[in-house]
Length: 96
Image (tube, rainbow, N blue to C red):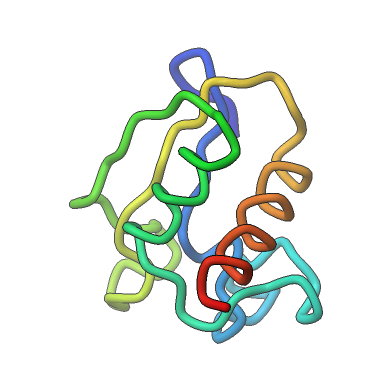
């Protein structure tokens, strides 16, 4: 999804605990188990992206679930799956 000159990256896009039918866009091998918004921000900073954080918004299809809270608008024209894969990989590196 393109928004405000960038790409909207919801936490559920990279969350291993969310099934693809509910919004995850990465395969299980690339996804991260229960990522946090802070981890996503650290990963984006490490990757050199410009972004805006929206912590109090919920992913509409999972409005009832707290793991779907928060998204980041990444200022880039790259495809969403590429951004998500890079962020997930960086989070895995940060976690160790």
